[in-house]
Image (cartoon, rainbow, N blue to C red; front, side, top):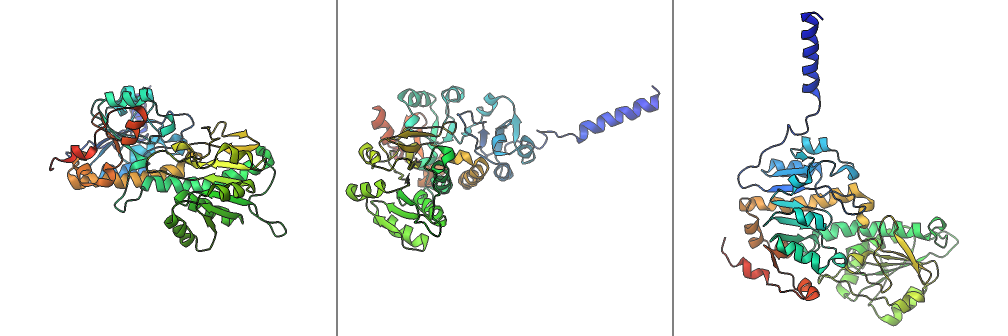
Length: 410
């Protein structure tokens, strides 16, 4: 080979390296006072969502924070590593490097393996999923002396639960689509159409709970032409639902005699009761379920808080239904994982807004907690001390009121 040819080949080789994607070249080091955030790939069974989207990462990085993302963390939600890299994230192959961050953000509860990787005094943001928590699990987190924040309890300035709300909208809309599938013959249902057509009476949908999930179930069911009945013991919620729907629908307090009669004639029953205490009340007994029509469908959206049907048991996306007393039960706790890209975007947008509030307090998360009661409400473990009374009573553990730690004047 001549010197000229060798030089030309070397030049082409150099150009190929220059033009090829470089995943870590856009990574920006953390600024003083910024957060150091880690986003691991979810390993929980059939969890397809990701805690932060590339657009959220870009916003956080441009506001002085550092984000480390495990490779392929967003793949199941159709977000590629190159998108995160271009947004300014650091992409790593080893999940242990993600857990080196001061703050770890997850969309599913930490597994026991992930708890083992946590470093002392870390801040962890994740859901709780109460039915799956054990005393061993709680003690493992406490021993790490972390500050643990549960999305279910986070409040905004207006006193609402923003992450619960956005995921509730998704769950409510999805529940009706799931029910329609379950009623079809292909899913062992009765082979009926959810809704109504011109020469047949509409199918009946009973909704337990007039909150956000209940409202979006009602919207979707009404849109399909179903006859909707809503039960809730909160009169204000029933009035608000009527007003938000812009039409009159059948509503009632949860009176066992009335509820039992409506259940017996329903094609679909959706449990959508959210409890601020962390455990949903069981309002439908097994006896009530046994009186329902064979082939009817129960969608228990409240299953992540224990469920509001006595016959409910947690299921998965792999095997989402079971039949009891001839009634099809759908009890998957992470319904939003059916639509991972939509859910990830909605979830990430709310979470990013919350995280950016720390900029008002020079990146000091403790100072943010001191001034933001809504975020403080989400904490169930503070620096290794259990602060949630419900969890303490459930597992017979000691707890300390979080406000006692907030006496320092920042």
